Amino acid sequence: MVNRTLRWTLSIAATVAVVAAPAAASTPVPPEDAHVVVDRLAGADRYQTAALVSAQFPDGVDTVYLANGEDWAQGADAVAAGAAAGSGTVPPLVADPSGRPAPILLVRAGGIPAATRVALEELAPTTAVILGGPLVVNPSVDEALVAAGIEPIRVFGQDRYGTAAVLATTFEPGFDTVYVASGQPLIPKPPFVPMMPDALTASARAGAEGAPVLLTKSSSLPVVMRQALEALDPPSITIVGGLGTVSAYVESELRQIAPVSRISGSTRFETAAKLFEDYESGAPTTYLASGEWFADALSVSSLAASQGAPVLLANQSRLPGATRDGLVSLDPDTVRFVGGPGVLSDDLMLEVEELLAPTP
Image (cartoon, rainbow, N blue to C red; front, side, top):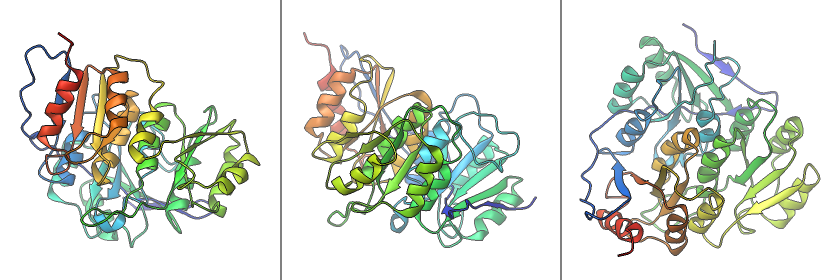
């Protein structure tokens, strides 16, 4: 079995994430009159959480996407992958693509964590799409996959913008819009790490529509992104994020390619809520992920896309107003937290239960 690499003529990159299925973290008991179920997908760490998320795909998988889950990587090569994975879109080198949605599993740069190995054994995919070049995910990961009987296909380019572009060009024509979000991470105060929340939540929305996500710089349009857009020739472009993340100048550049609309709020939490505000009330499931750490939102983006489910964001111990309003409007049957109490507290679960409990 030979590793194969997909390079677009514009040069693009990607990384694969593997997942293992751990026991779910403890969940507070909801009030007896609660009509909403609030539960949690969580493992001992981000790799186990991703594994548990991957186990939620009901029909099995032929392909998995593997992404670097370490903080320094910022999820940069993978933030747009949820749209492709969740819609069942795979690179052309994948033999006999089934069109079934694929999970995103997490690896380290130097190898496959134990939880991810277990997940791979249970999922038994034939192909793993590695997102990112050899500096992002070491060739030792390819070797471990081959030894496990899984064919590695590596998708990568010069940077995160190229990676998103190659993933976008794997989509078949017929989508109504291309989503564009900032590829420049928000830089928080320690201990939080840089992340691209708008791109992560956009991937869940885009994948549900069978549409790609591209990344841009805040104040300029990367050449590789422009070329991808011209090749895709979309009917429209949807910017996700405010003028502080995608500038008016970039918007004007995009308008030269296709009509442009913008979905934005004053914070990452409000932008996520606005992305899904037109979803019908009473949806089966809404996912709640950390807006301060990228890994769990990355892992759940493809699952949410495959289910047409919203992904909203929260602080570790605080439910932002926009998220509260979004939950009330969506009124889901289930709110599923992604990640353990260290990223989303148990008290937050109780707050959501009370928020959505029937009025006496």
